Image (cartoon, rainbow, N blue to C red; front, side):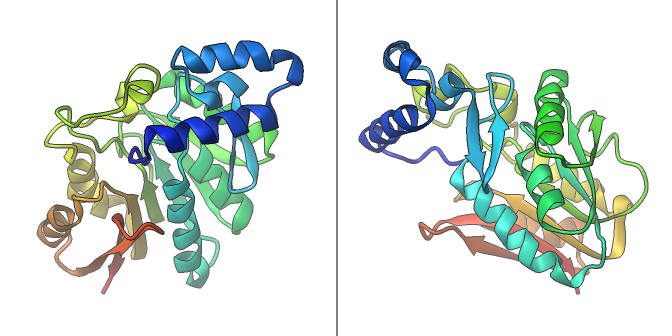
Length: 246
């Protein structure tokens, strides 16, 4: 998720989005809801992610462009894996899991702690004809066996971090905020993931743009034999963490 756009940019984007995707008969009502501070994606009821139409509502985070970048980078790194077993931690709308399943030959699983989010993700998988095994639970707890890739866009905002009202008042806080200055989910995954990884593996995370160095330190602490690096998004910000075996 990315929350660093100006109000003017968001307003212009939202109006174009409504005009493009909302039934003309509903446009006036949609503009009123927009003025009242409701996200345009929730008004329309769906979002285009990587070319796939996904349902979104207040039970799931609205997918951002940076998450598309994470998926694209991950696909390129998974080319050397044959039919990898992948799990998406904190799947939300299912956007990551669905795209990976559609784009590469893989065994795909997805986890979320929210029953409501899983309902949305399952509908999206069915609509997009993506065969995914969904598991309910917190982070790694529901996992069974070994995986070639763990991918996640977990909650990573500090509870003290300023957030735009349109996000704070509409999107699920469970998908936005985490303890330990936003690092709690990463810490839990990195600390315990070795049990669930094959010898050759890939970890892929979307991260906050100031968290790279702290997360690299955690990788060194919990997975000392691995190789980790941070990559930038299209705006030049540190937004992705990848970890491989050495």
